[in-house]
Image (cartoon, rainbow, N blue to C red; front, side):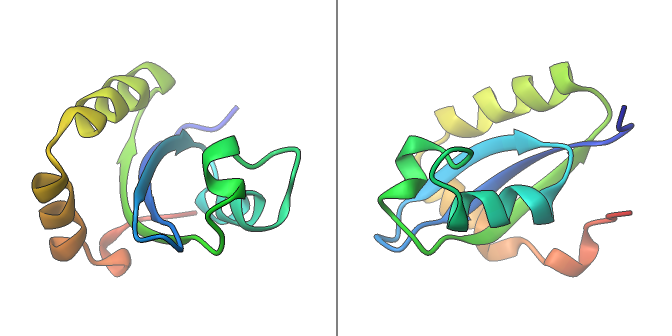
Length: 93
């Protein structure tokens, strides 16, 4: 069982943002870009997708709650989060 959960935004080919949660960002990004079974229905038709934002959280519950908060933000607020995000600040195992 992983001790870290991530909430993330993907930038889709149509410039839309997709939010999700995972325990493994690299694996999940690969699934969104290559798998027709594991990728979200939304991202399958909007490939390629790129990871543009992520936050590390402790529990699945925390990640789900934060995902809900992020999805409710305005497009402008989401874009501001993405603009200020630096992938290097994220601590991944």
